[in-house]
Length: 435
Image (tube, rainbow, N blue to C red; front, side):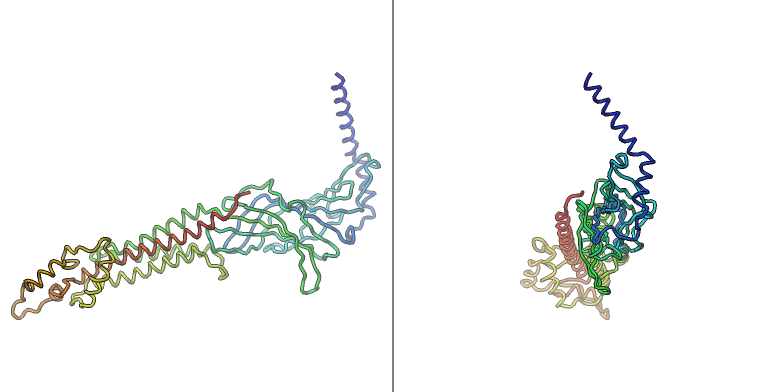
């Protein structure tokens, strides 16, 4: 019973204290005493120390092409003004009151790397909280759009580091000094972005000297390290590019007589050109960094363009009717054909070559008799080619060349793709965890 009565008395006293602390007459008297002879133009002390912390709410966007970083949040600015100190007992326990920038002094701060608004951070509608010790808290919110140097080397598996740089404006280091307050960046209210993961956020203090007036000014940089989420780019860009890269090699599988080789190779080439255009629209117009993705696409694009030239060459070989030169037959049978065979070539058909046993029988029994043309009839180019040393026709040469180029293209594409994904995979494992 005694404990309940004691709790009731404490509650009544606390309620009466709060009521007296927020008495309008007492606060009006306090304002009159503190602000009557207050000079709004004079800073509080010879060197006013101002502490800053940025409370991040969300990352709006990071436009890679324009190198624009947009973030929403609010600053917490803290400084002391000894002219605004009072004794609580004289004003019935008032601990704090609110004012605005039209009544009391506030520091002139500017976001120096802003791209659309270089005005001094100010808003008459934002209250300033002043406590009895003369400490003032100011929380100006805003959407801050700043310039960010983009490194596109590992795009779209890249990590970027952007910042919001705040500097004192007009007051040099001997008059106003800036410091980070606490950790510098608070992430308690942070909402995740759909494209970027926030890996790390911190603040750094620097001193910069201007060349014009040779004065040193204090700055605080709020740095945000982010990593791009690659899921969207992997499905919509990388996967189609890999598929198209392998499709570009299949042009050498189509028979030359099908009539579709040229149209197929041109279609794949145009598809690569479209993808390269889409990716170029997302990258900044700078030559400082080169994206591995752009290099990979350019290499595949060159291979696809070369396949068009090689397709024209194959079609030209396929429809020739003159005799196959002996040196071309020797190169085809001695070099190219062994390369396209996994376990050696068993020349079983006339479209490839004559077997060694047939050559041996030819040496022993003499050449096989062939049909002689009638009197006055000239042998055709294909008949002359059929009677040549290796028995290869131009169609055989074209097929062998197609098979060789198909295997060569597949090997080159696999090597280039493996190198590309290995580099991007290493970059992905280096990044840290999300906040």
